[in-house]
Length: 196
Image (cartoon, helix red, strand yellow):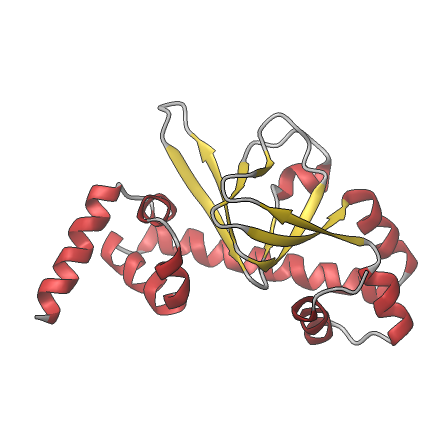
């Protein structure tokens, strides 16, 4: 199967592969179409795949003991999603990952990823760079959550992800930013009043 162009461009931005290497690398991925509200990972089951988003949007979240859900991540086009702790260590997942739009993803199984890493150092480099980007993103997110006000976090989110904010449900954005939907509405209303 021919892999979607966005994925080829993503690979080429990350590592330099020959045509043969590119063919070998992309052959390890399977295209999957998801319907809105379809889950690809659920708690207590091992995450078998890491998914690259070709089209659409997904949300990963956990549910606290109080029954409140907490958004860990979003994934839109050109982003990756999984329960990484489950995927990398092949342990039961603790997160849900669900499509919030009809979506298309490319998935690689854990065993196939390991095989690629062993076969070619360029493939290993690709996954290392992806892991480094993920680690840096999560560090920025933690620092922001600990040091910025709720309004600052929302403003930062709009600044960095303006198109994403238009596509995501308000409850999911509020959950991601660590606030209630009602509090996010107050912040948004306050911003509207300040503009007028």
